[in-house]
Image 1 (spheres, chains in turn brown, blue, red):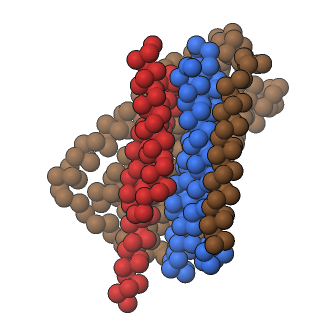
Image 2 (cartoon, one colour):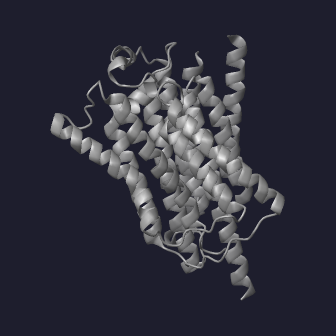
Image 3 (tube, each protein chain N blue to C red):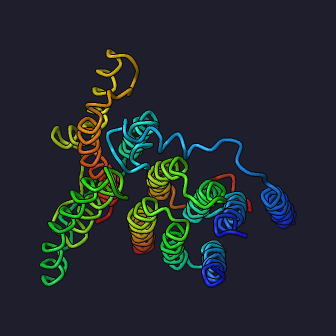
Length: 219
Length: 100
Length: 87
């Protein structure tokens, strides 16, 4: 009975919320603050010509720095939550499947590099490239070509933390020049590409780690 | 009615559905799904409302991009905790929900 | 324009329906598959909102990686339950 009353109250509150929010949105006036013009006006100073990448790494580089830190923390949390460390050898899939995974993995790495490179002037960038890298690692694990990760060794640790460390180092170096992540326009393109390359590798490893560390128990 | 506004309204409904799911559903993996629906709703509101004009606005796009990556991190951490709970107790519910 | 809006309405209904079914379907594996379908529908929605960057990320992360994580967790939970019953 109590559970039924709770359901009733929650559903009603949700419906009231939806009605109120829809009503408010329908009579919403034009935006008080339009950031589109400032973003395009200063685009030439950012070192990239794709506005979303400019926002992510130049205008709001701070957000991206904290984001990669959050990802690293989540991975640490997963490692700390632990689990039965019984990572036996993975079950090998059908040879045909393994062969196509072997063919697909290099292509996926190529796609990741393209996405990273294209991010400067087209939709794409470090996040998408890192996700494709992670997908390649997960694919290789699922067909039984790579083992699940048990506990990270030194090289893997360096890879996981490298993107964040590189980003932080660039930010600290720029702090001595004036402002945190205030890129000098002449160097902005190169610095952003350097940061993005580091981010891609680390993001790929961290996102793959979410899967590979989690799937180590019971295999 | 532009498509931006339409998807913002869908986002509100998804968010409310997600909140109701997180509050009402005791089974933890499904609660994680509801949490993800909540996130998707919030992202749709952010981008949809910024799109009421004709040109897309890159600032909410970048924010949502960050949000999607953080959401998968939160999902992975939540799943790790659920798997740990299941390994230790054999349950998929929190102890306080057992009475329901 | 009206054709586009009609498509958006259809997409909106599909989004809401798949989200509702994700939470209401009794079986967990079906719920996860529906959630992956929801992620792919979100990808189309991002394209309709002319946000190709988000569409790329949603397809790779929201639908792909989250789906893989959820399915892997489901498999592990089921296997453990079976092992518990056997012992």
